[in-house]
Structures are given as C-alpha cells and as structure tokens.
Amino acid sequence: MCLALPMRIVELHPGDMAVAERDGVRKEISVILLPGVAIGDYVIVHVGFALSKLDPEEARRTLALIAEMAAPRPR
Image (cartoon, one colour):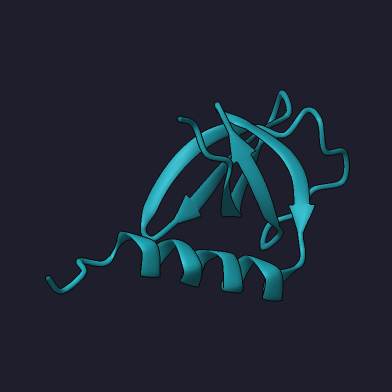
C-alpha cells in the first residue's frame, strides 16, 4: 500500500523541482502540478509528486497521527 504524506518545501529548484522534508528526511520532488508553491508550504507528496497544498495546522495533525500509528504499542 502506498501513502501520500505531508512534507514541507525547503528548497525550490529550476525545472519545477523542489526539496521537501519530513522528520529530517529530504526528498527531491516535482512541483509541476502546483504552480506558486513556496518555501515553507506543506504539500501532500505521492510517488515523488506534490499533489496539493496543505494547511500547516492540518499538516501538523496528520504528521502527529502518523507518528502515533508508527509508535510501538504495549502488549
């Protein structure tokens, strides 16, 4: 199963490319589908493409939920 994850744009590059970061992991992604994206924007990333912008508060809630789901559970 593939997930689209929130990431924050940290660099913009020529050719509709950018670097996005989540939890210290940086990935080069295409922003061709999102004209006007800016450094600091949160975007939903799937298979290397930014699909949509995300409100910063919604991004924080989503990232917190992902962290909670990934945390070890007591048995």
